[in-house]
Image 1 (spheres, rainbow, N blue to C red):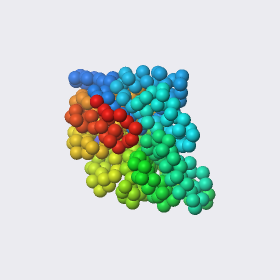
Image 2 (image 1 turned 135 degrees about the vertical axis):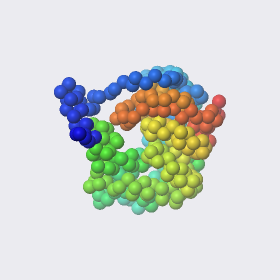
Image 3 (image 1 turned 90 degrees about the vertical axis):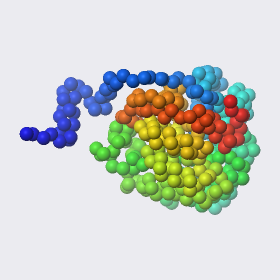
Image 4 (image 1 turned 180 degrees about the vertical axis):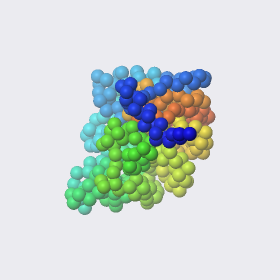
Length: 358
């Protein structure tokens, strides 16, 4: 009897696919499973997207279309995380209040120029204070902090670098949250081999790889972030993308218990939730006061998959982007009160500038 290993079967299948002009990347089988289907194109309750990058959609020419799309999704409001600072932020806030009252709040951003100046921290904090007075509802920190941001000596600037302490303290003083994107999914820091479940994405987009010869470990960067959260207990932090722990909700829950000033959101990590619906449902019920809705990349039809995972008990349906997940999704069927908190109540409590929800 000849026994075929999994590798031999895979190699044989790959050869057959190649002879038929089909590559692994192109293989997208259609499921033959017949189960109840409850697709969603509109959220059950009005929702706030706390992780928004509408960018050029906020121009006077494109804003009406954006508002129309938001209404169709039942999106009550969106956080514009790219507000910058100074006059640009002030003008954006003022314009949106006139053009789309109640539909957007704006977060400020930091300017890292002259970061080696001993007074950079106090100056950045003073600028944030003025931005908050000019209408900024929060501060957004991009992923370059901790990974690619370097000082004039070429040294990586750590997430818990003390130069940022005055900034975090000012956010706490002004009662505005800091939404911070730190690092990338842990799997991006691992070898891109046959065991890497994001192999397809990292093969198609090699710039997303975080090799050890260029970056510190994921554990190092995220450890810096968590120490910073603990050091600044009077400041509320929104740990973007479930802190890249959507695949380890038990650990995320432990951190939530340990760091009461840490909140989180679900932008770009829905694929992790949709493959563990039972445990994820339990987790969302337990931490229902600390999690908010976020999407990240604005693409109207992709919200539909979010609604279906969050609201229904559907089984085995497609995710919207195969390179994030070659697996299928399952619905969590969250209770209405948990949905309301996720969709808008938690954001309204944490982020200034929103009106009361429905």
